[in-house]
Length: 143
Image (cartoon, rainbow, N blue to C red; front, side, top):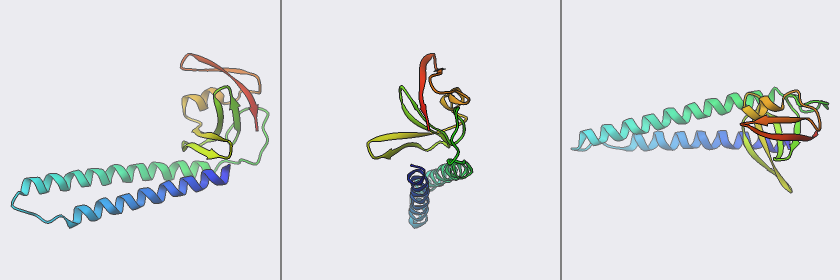
């Protein structure tokens, strides 16, 4: 599970890097025509897109760093960083924000400890209840 999540992080980083290059190349290949304002507008839009993609890339790198700094080998009696938690709404890996990680037979959501759900789960033990956005749920298992 952890290996699959790590691989997904790296894949998403590579995809963002490739997209940044594609947008930059596209902006660089445009030649200025008689419609100067249209060219400048297109170029500005491309620069904005590159900026947003770089921001996403940096955020994803920070999440990967957080993920890499998590010890997934410790067994814990209560929910903590690195715990794989089963709730009534599915499985959650408490580490870093990655989203859904498909594993054979199910999907596990990798969530940040800073997310509302991550905060609600922290410190909970098996069979304890927690609430997120006014909805009650229960910790079914902790691995």
